[in-house]
Length: 432
Image (cartoon, rainbow, N blue to C red; front, side, top):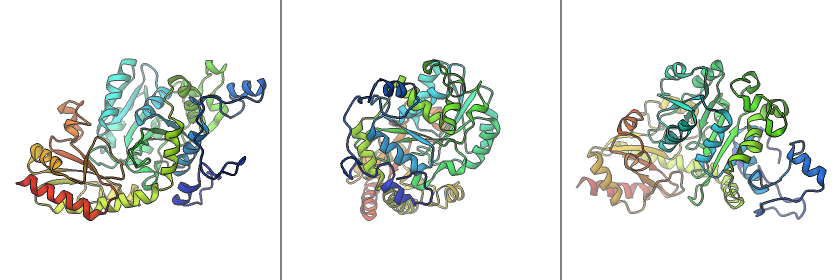
């Protein structure tokens, strides 16, 4: 199927893009290509593949037909020019930053970002000379002030983890375009079903496919999608890996050979080749299967979460609920712009009893699972300050809006009455 056809709806794309059947056998289901390498037709064919004069598969660290089918499907949903699938969401960020940054370069990053990404930047890339300025992206002027000559990207989450703030994409995109740095959006919590950041001016999209895109909690994965809208060639000194000759390909310039898809090509043929964070064919097969139900699942996640958030907001034991779909959310109006199809299944709330009440609630739950994951089809709960964001200092958590009693809830697609019933009995027990 031609993934460039923009007139198809999101459900049609989810079902059909990436794979339309095996032309050799007629098999309609996507095969799992369990192979490490691929036979060349002859020596000329091998040489053309290695020199990037012909597209095709060489070695499954670089590409695999099953992985490619998933990549094409996700790319079609996001509306990019190319997608790189990786072994984890972390690997997606590692490969992207490696493509854009060298020692001495700089990133501007939301301080309301997943704690693991923050630690990756502070503890790993800082050792390699890539520095980061953390800002409150709810105030774009802070982003504007933080960008400097060495800045190579601005990184935000469309819905912050775990504070559920909504990124002002259009304002940030205009700002980044003026400063000639790409806007990189982590779209994990919304998925392309609820928000397609490229439509609002973003340049690169990142996913932890472990979450909603999988939906089953049965694998780890990530992805980087190139929007094809950033002019890397206009900034050769900033992005030499893309706009200057590449010695490993005998002087090839990615912007000249691949045009709008320069970043995608660089990630696939160079960065993945050297860092090796490729997914398995089996995981890609499972992810491709999951794409087919993603629109239906995200609709149900959003509907359930809206009902649960309304229940929690009126419960006397609850102090505050952070969910963009609630009118009480400070960025509810912004959510109506960027999350028109629904606000997803993620929310955070605080109990009036603080940390101890939160712990008691979690331990009294019967249906809802206590796990350090989100985006599963089943409802999950966790206490960020003591788990997912525990590596941050108390000051950093406070800056990110993570109180000691904050609870993160990932609402699943069970019958919503059962989710609410479990929360109700646990809240009553915690109150006692």
